[in-house]
Image 1 (cartoon, rainbow, N blue to C red):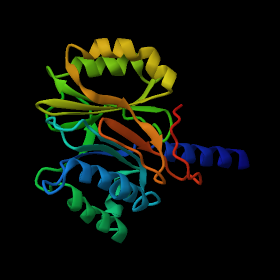
Image 2: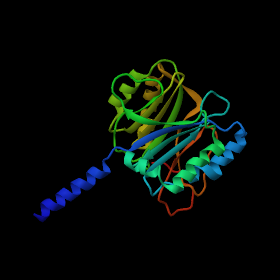
Image 3: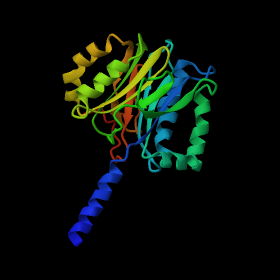
Image 4: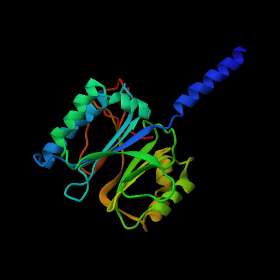
Length: 254
């Protein structure tokens, strides 16, 4: 009886960890009152660290911001924000610290243009101004090798996305999120390792080419970083590492 009780407990624990996370894509346009330098300093020294400190132990499980190149027709900051569950996110909205952080957005971003969009399962054709969790996996974004690619849309990339899912998951590609608009597409890919990404990079780029044209400087691996020393610039992205006692900047990837 004890054996079956232990097995049931183990199953329940593994099921809990296998829950598909709740994802939101953030697209922020800097306040017109800020210069690009002011905005960059605010992201480095204030906003990005507070994203983590306000929610790290309250349901936020991953945060991957990127700053696209300046002076092109893209948002000034893009982020994949990952919560344990939708219920955890809804509870967080009522949290006092989180509400203060939410207000902080409008110190740096234009409230009329900036917005957040949740992902949905991919079934059927993709639509503009929709974000999709292609694989619906329980992958841990704190691990693996994360890449963000922002591309000019040449045509709707449904066939490319299906090929990515068929050819590379789950062995190499463990999670795949995509947001498509009329003019550009944002991809967040989580590869099992740096070697898996590099091994398949050439064929992925070849598959992408008929559908999407990456903006120069906007298709980058996300450097693993702690909040203790955020060093990000335009054309760079970071994968924030949580629960660390190490005050050093983590620049290593799997």
